[in-house]
Image 1 (cartoon, rainbow, N blue to C red):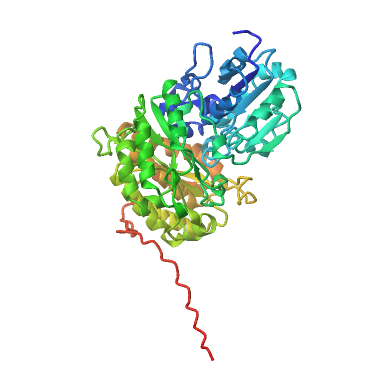
Image 2: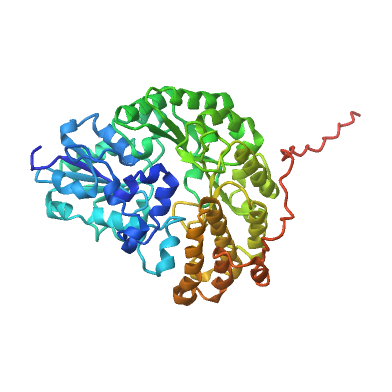
Length: 555
């Protein structure tokens, strides 16, 4: 390879490319930890060395969005003109011949729902790993050294964060692409290669499904897209505003074959909602099409594991047979294991599900389409029944819950706590997050929630969630002894000063303080049974009959 560099260099940060423990949710949580502690062996989170490289230094696996861009560019440019790499290898590929650097930005500043929370437990200005790794990429010396003859294009689902924080000029980014870019990305890179000026910002629109290419190389976690969009209309989410559409099965299978040919043995079926694949009218789940999809992917030679990304819970309650139909692949070929699973090899299927609130009032105001065909007042029953169905078939979901939605009252928080109480003993991961105001959503004008403004009830919800997670995933007695001792030390040395005394009793539940003591101050008493029960069934409301029009009497 010439030391003059490649004409086009595509790059992604180490944290966004990492296949940490073969688990997407563990990788996601890893990125929320404070960067300044990430090199300490005790935390075991030094992720930069975990990413595989080819012999020439190019990346083995990067986020799927970057692979889509690469595929489009290969329609016009030679593979000798393009390099795809991690930050540590930029100086191998950026040189005098380089004309454009394209950078993937999934969560470049760590200000999404999860990562805007957890690093701040260590201090108000603590930088999460995702942000630190992206900064290391965008400010790399190789880019600075050759900036006079190259242009920098940044795109991806988190590119808006850079504009929000007014960092485009400081980081010398020529163009920020926000949204889907298949329709124009080739023209944009061609202009950059020719040295033409680029627009500072481009809003991408959803392309026709025919414009989405098959990829040419391996994506992180063996990601293969199956749908785009959602259409359920949740006001805090931009993707929910775009209608869900499915990619053709042969397109999907070709991408699966490409992943396997490039060394992947695990395929992640990526979607905003797996149950929207080849959907019928009004979000009706197409069970036969889903079953065929999973079985067809599993049948591709070389595929050892099949996992899936996101879904909603209402379709599971409406069509319980879908979980039974998918389990032979989703459970039997999962990468995840847990002793609570009844599978012969203790495997379980994971699925990202947004539950978001237990308050029917807030649900109806901000996300009522998520429950369709059920009503907001049935949301609690939908969650309880859906969780039961999944757990009975060894599906242990990864669920998010938003704390601090605009207008949230103590009564709303109590509704969420009541539902959380009823879910005790479920097989799941529950991640409490804070509401983040995203500009491209219907709630973009609202203020984001802040840790230091949480009430005692909200803190109780937050730490009860993590108490559940610890009890389910960490049953090591030695770990719990150390952890339970560390929690009050943290509170008295740092937590009380940063967040106030309203954190005190909720965080002591995390440390397994006796409920007999905590129940005097907290809303829930975990010694008692929840009054909420799993319903036998959840009836779909019938549309109200229109009043009959009286017949006119002819005179």
